[in-house]
Length: 247
Ligand SMILES: Cc1cc2nc3c(=O)[nH]c(=O)nc-3n(C[C@H](O)[C@H](O)[C@H](O)COP(=O)(O)OP(=O)(O)OC[C@H]3O[C@@H](n4cnc5c(N)ncnc54)[C@H](O)[C@@H]3O)c2cc1C
Image 1 (spheres, rainbow, N blue to C red):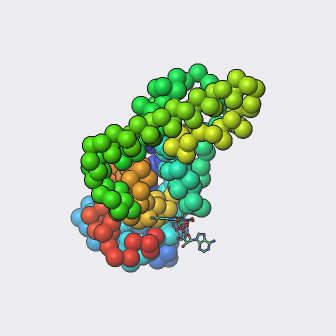
Image 2 (image 1 turned 90 degrees about the horizontal axis):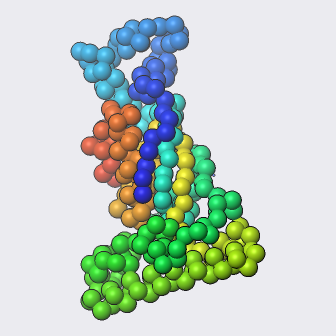
């Protein structure tokens, strides 16, 4: 899996502060220099003042200003299962690679179980992996071998059938029905900072599945570079709070 930031609002935290200060200023924020906009906020430097204000907004649940800055990320190689989970979030905009127009007629089915076309869950190869809902815990080596073999054979056979169906003239959009839910897909998604905080609350949580959690953590890493005051505070102070669904 890869996650890259494609585009993002320039200076998002200045925008958050301008939007928030607009609510409490007599003057028009559009015509007031930023240092004057932030004049009444505690802090020695403009950056300190932004930190004070952003922390206060997050503590008080004043999330509206976080809806203004927006980021677009490109995600490479998540499963269709993970895609189905993340696309449940209605305030995120998505573009998803089409299996109608992109045919996988030239891949070698024997290579597929190595992870090129399909996401291989850790539980397929790691005897010690304990998933979120797994009741059995670690398994012995024989069981682990059987599990891995069955997983790999099933994937390989599905891709062989898919290619045979294409050769028999079936359209890629119909032949894809035999492909596994672990098939990889690329996606572009856009959301504002408030929505990203909400997605993080739900999808970087311990009860989320490992794949969407991994993806969300990677998005959060990019977000921390782009919008550092907000996401460093989220990581340090908000991530483990009791009511994680407020944003
Ligand atoms: C661990 C986990 C397990 C899950 N298991 C299942 C499952 O088994 N089956 C299943 O179907 N889903 C499942 N989900 C998905 C979950 O139920 C939500 O549909 C999904 O996470 C979208 O989040 P959201 O409801 O916060 O909505 P979002 O679309 O992210 O919207 C953000 C917020 O906007 C508000 N909002 C948006 N639309 C409406 C609306 N129409 N009415 C009122 N308020 C609205 C809500 O406050 C909402 O929290 C699971 C999610 C997680 C994290």
